[in-house]
Length: 177
Image (cartoon, rainbow, N blue to C red; front, side):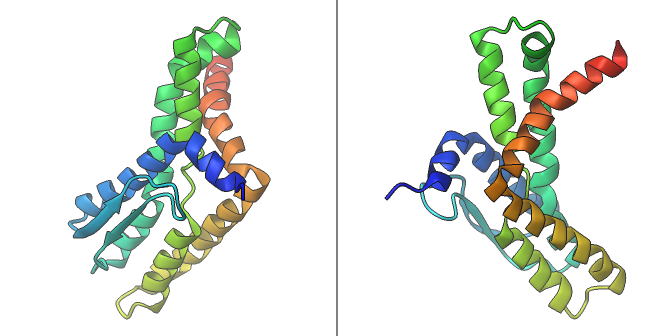
């Protein structure tokens, strides 16, 4: 049986690896113990980081949404030098196209997963020490994560990856010209 999601995951595996690295990075930044990391596997989930429950609910929020920041920034940085010759001058090299592929595949895995949202929701909403301001902030964040995860069915993640890797560099060039 052919599962398109698995095929997309195989094609965009660099993004999965960076996504899990971002979770691990934020765990390390906040001193949260990590029990197991799987950067990539041909299964569902494609990768994961198992860590202790953070004592500080803000840390849980940041660990959950960390890939959004890391994948977006790294996808943009990798693709930017390639997007200019390819998009503006229509004369890219093979290396430019490889950089665009990497930038798009990394950026399209920026959205936290439904598992990330559930984990965040469980800790933030049901935690005894979670301040009300954080609960108020977590509701729309969890909603956006769910919309992003469900939107991947409609290729929202690919559209985001293309925007970050090609659209943003093009916008920057237009604004600076």
